[in-house]
Image 1 (cartoon, rainbow, N blue to C red):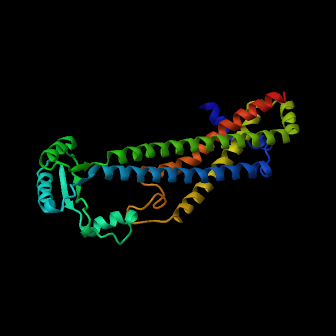
Image 2 (spheres, rainbow, N blue to C red):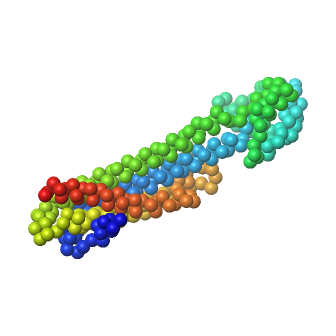
Image 3 (cartoon, rainbow, N blue to C red):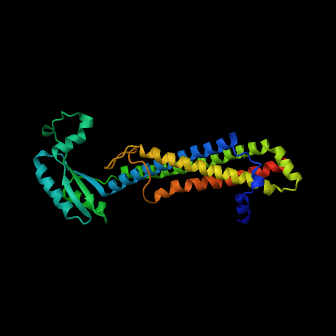
Length: 297
């Protein structure tokens, strides 16, 4: 820790070995800003998509659909029996029979808007919403099988599992993108530091002739590139947050590309990007500086 502080503090005389301007300075700031911008967008997109998938999965976990047999002669009796069974089942919060208009809206994408429901044996659908504790789905199926043969309870398990898997994979992709961004930042800063060291080879020789140690010379490079990376990343984070404000917002549930951003503790991630970029720059420059100085010995 002491050595790290000594490298960061800097020294006016040693700082002359690092050009304050030039292509390496602009490249470091630009690379850090671009990578920070992309990191903000990647984290926001992966987090928002993951939240949407989780929300859909939670909604499917609480909702279920009961499909009654398509028997016009006993439709009313079957509906009354089904409602009685559902309303007396522990763990079910609300039960609602879909209206003919709602059922036609569900079938419209497949059969068109002119489907004559009144002349077709369409099974009655009942929307079931569980409470926080939930209900025994297998027990309910057994009871329905005994009282309403042919009734089918769909608890959306087959739809919920892929959504949970998608949310997990989206977050995994987000972390993979962040790792790639960190690697690119480290590579660019390493190249920039090596270029700066090569351009100042004569100055480094003079410093060595007057007794300067490698740690003394490296301190200036590390300090300059660390500050440049931190400043560039801060600018990239600000640009990324401003870009997110241009994304569409929705008061409702929205889709995958609405309400993209951060919520709750997620706002800590953008704040961590500049110091993380500075840390990456510190170690990348330090490694490059000592390796290059060793070659120039």
